[in-house]
Image 1 (tube, rainbow, N blue to C red):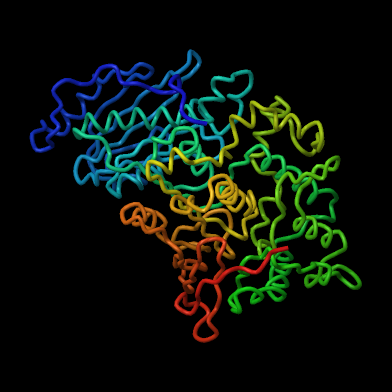
Image 2 (cartoon, helix red, strand yellow; image 1 turned 30 degrees about the vertical axis):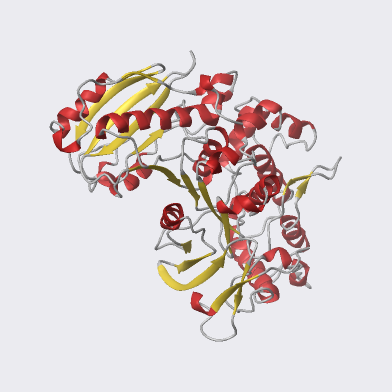
Length: 517
């Protein structure tokens, strides 16, 4: 799935008189304004203006969130690779202190807006950056209805066009293009990054995805609604947050130390855990310390994969023991907004659809959700990364064993698909770290969850050529760091050495895994 020439945004005319020597350049404001003269085949510059420190105010307000930004050159463009396209892009260029690299800001879910928040974080770290609305406005899938071109824009063309155009703007402003083009985002942005590696292997040099991959979008969204229907099949079926915590503690009691030998509240490779929530069945009436029969069945269903009844084919893999605290998105109302948008546009083409009045059919609706054009546009599963890796491209994936949004299997399945397609040599260009107890994405410091410097690890790998075999993550609870944990490159597991604090990474080592069921 390599780049097609028709998908490219090519520079026709460059600004005349921009010096390649930064010391000889005119004043930064004038230099920035000159970028308004840039011309492209399928893009138009609509703004080129210098922004003073702390002076940026996004269209939707919240100026206070950007008051610490350094000075930068702001360039806005509209990309039109098709007659229907109307792709908005912003490129931000540090006036001083550029680190020589480019880091685009991706989009979550159905996009529909420029990611100013992520751009500000990236700019503050010294990178040139850019973002796009992917060709439509608002967090909605309505753009897909009757418009294959806009679906293509959302899928990959907008992001690729943004990268190509941004590199051209960077080259004009600084006199040379970026030394490295990197990404470090999860969720929908992680999907965008992997699509670039798969379709346009020259766009990015290194990719970190600090959260479980959601590359099988058509199947994940189907499974999210299917799980929602199962959980809400009757008024008695949902499990409250308090009881989900009860199930979680019981699962830990059964499996906490089974693989790693440590009692630390984390289940290492929970695929090996076969805890049955039936042990929590209330013996008489419902109570706070037990599950009703309906709730036991709900918990068991969460631990089973979603399958097509007619074929037995797995639509998406089961949630694992230890993920119970993250069942909220599946167990609470309303259903996932990402999945709802998918069904309204891609499946039913009906903005009024809802899963309560129109439950999904596991046969006919699954076929509609996985029509070839939807798979082509929304999934990012190409496992042959030869062209990307031949350029020295690196991919660092960080997944969560306790993910209950798209399930842990997104990262594991893709990694194993790449290894099966390319062989053991692919490990020179791809590494996977599965963190026990982690949900869909790594959490910023100060929140509950796990964190480590994924971008720093990626850049060290790219610079030295030495692939990481283990990383040290910090665990947080209520804003407080509670310990560190060594995480080994998949498929290895982390094993406690039998002495010392189980919340100290120094007391763990890597080992080969036992066979999983």
